[in-house]
Image (cartoon, rainbow, N blue to C red):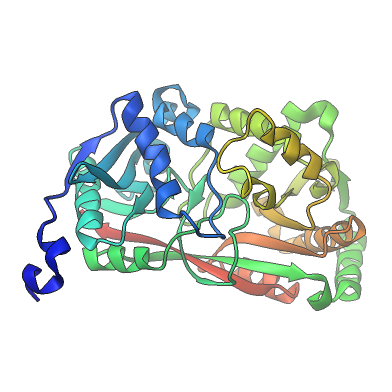
Length: 384
């Protein structure tokens, strides 16, 4: 079909130009674009502007110790029509040695030409740095928001999970990107959870091993965070896409999360006096953030804190058992703790997300726990 056949508005469109984000005005445009794209969408949860600004000012962000970031805007007819971020993550490359660079922060109008221009610029930027694979979306790594929402339950996303129009997948695939890995979300609901069964399993494991559960100790919060980081790196280090967090990144995240954490929802497994496993769950603060439109201050933070113990849905953000103890069945203690504590505190449902589709052991455990596959996300890749 010719441009003329598509209609006069399409025929008159100018070329797409892609330029780097350099000025304060560019940064404001980068942050503002999704607010226009999702205007009127009742399910979109605006990201906090301060979080996006933190990445845009990437030289001050702790990730800068291990990664270089760049950001681009697509413009047509003096109008911003798309955006993208790109990341050369040295921590990832040291760990995996797979030549992969990442794109993320991807937002665009329903125009494949714009998407192609943005993705081509990302590919070029990574190629110039000697990388051989374009992978994403990761904003900017798997330690932050990643994946493209493909299918699943309707409604707003859960805290720190992706949300996007359906046409994004078509744009990426038209450019030549294909599936690298799917990320799965499972919902654990009271009416579908056999609590008695998990009590029996957990009791047998506890009796056989002597393992016990302890709660997060806020009086030693910094030490507890370092412990979580050690356990996380040990438990997740062999997983596809795992990226070690440097201590400054972990400290920054801990500082931001501390006011939001509930002591009963963060627990450790102790075995022979050693902490060998953990789980970290958070209330689904998106149920509050959706009303803040990306602005936490001056009063949004108070609304979040007020809702802290009232939100009836949680996300299990992280869970892991140290490698040398995985054969003991200790995950039963964690799943029993999620259900028991959640139901006791008036939280009838939680989402375990995300799980790698290729991590069959974790997927099987989530299913045995009564989890229902609720959403599927995808990370794409292509050779550069």
